[in-house]
Length: 245
Image 1: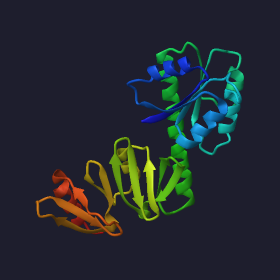
Image 2: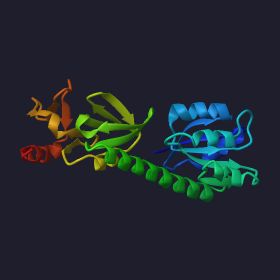
Image 3: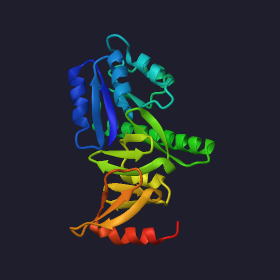
Image 4: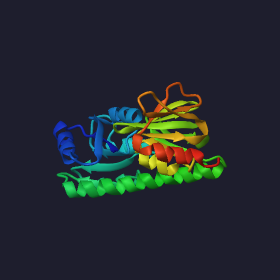
């Protein structure tokens, strides 16, 4: 899910935007009625996109966008306003789009799609930059703390639950909002799916064992609890472990 924060001092305007986002892959993770509140919510929730009104009490939308533009990995900003005279200023603060109220659903979807593509490109550039600076491969995760770099050799396993993936590594845990499949593609061939919601690092495997009930589980070095292996994946796991390291 792509996380969105709605910022508008009018409750009805916020409700309308939320209705337009129903049954889409965009999740409204927070709302704000003013600029200062918006910056707090953005810091707390690290959204991918901010739908931002311009005329608001306190800091206006242009001031908020100017502050966000100073961040190393800012969310994409889409202005949603009733006034057309701020368009030039909006793009000076790196807005991705400028929508005039009343906002049509097709215009909003187009703007969101464009903004999502831009943020994915930014994340990919960051991955290339990081891995270009360090010979040891790493995976880049979006988390509640921002963009985190985790060395692949430090990852023990990954486990998906609902909309999030927990990356268990030698330094602790990182909760990521990226899909498990997306993270799986970023990892090297030494990772193995043992369950529909679990990926493990082959280098930390101690043993594949059969339980009394006939089900299999894997024990990893440095992990207290055994991890269940899906019945349909047992053969694949055995074949994987039989390969030379």
